[in-house]
Length: 243
Image (cartoon, rainbow, N blue to C red; front, side, top):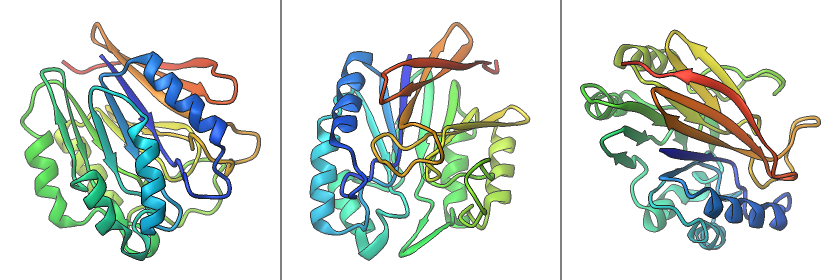
């Protein structure tokens, strides 16, 4: 089974690179994923005309299943309302006999800060608690600081409670974006995987635009990163799965 994790497209920003977007679309098709997860910031300011552009881009991403959550840029200017009109619920769910992926909205309108909120905890428990197979939580904001990204300001204000919930439920992966840097943290048996920006020049230092590939095979998950500029794929690590 193959899951692609893409984030921080910023399709309407002056920093969006159209050729990188074409590379992402082409490689998504060739990689033939079972699920594509997009963890937010499709737009830059959340305006209706920006969502039209972002929606057209996402429609070019052909996958058997697509799960999208909003980012802080998407929640600006009541953009979260338009998000629901175009992409449906801000708490999307995908489930098959091998994996359950729950997306949650970690944004606050017109704020860059993150907040999951206690009202979502029951949904996380209900969908990722007593279930077989791989458990994945997808959200825009990162739950712990990411090295090399400057002073930390935007971690969800309730990140401690959310992390504790992830450990309590045995969640295997938390997929996030926001910081435009690929990174992986492991806390006990939960892996926190952050994707870089896939199509924006808003890069840190000498980093590159990228997205993540997660291949589930024979009791392991193999995490890879694709560099969008060179189309090179590097294997990041092999993660043994529980059970």
